[in-house]
Length: 244
Ligand SMILES: [Ca+2]
Image (cartoon, rainbow, N blue to C red):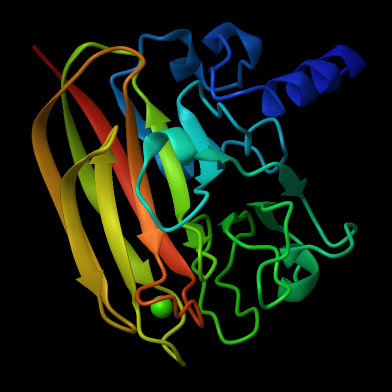
């Protein structure tokens, strides 16, 4: 990554909620040219194990975010501002994980338990990893909320027409806690939701969701009753443009 890329990325991350042009951060994925009809979260994020791929605006559509409170209010969402690509960074979830190759975007404020949450993380290794009490399959994305903030993956639509949204939320840490609540919102409107029990997995399948360019779908994990212990939650997600 060249210096001007870094400067541009920093300016982008610390800007307001306005989104940068798709042209500002092209990945190697050919689907970044706006002609893609399928977006797979793990495939797009894991296209290469570095920040260029695991990035705000990855493949032109993916964003990793947090809320100000547990309220699902679009205007209160902000980008997770910090990135860790390995064990070299101090005071980050990467150190907590203790395993290189677990990449993460995380909060800039320690929460009430002095953890850097919420966090959106990706297992970029080729094998299942077991940080602390978590069972984390290879090449999968996970989210963890704070007790008082939502963990959010955003997909900003580059297309108009209708899309199909399929995937699942899975509890990657069944050893404690009370599970999570999950939501799929289009702006502030909830399209689907679930109450995921500890250790559970719940699928979603939304057909022919009408969408306009620039509209955002939010995939949200709430800690459930403010109990965020063992809330590492996998998100498997594929969005397919199905035409008009
Ligand atoms: Ca919980």
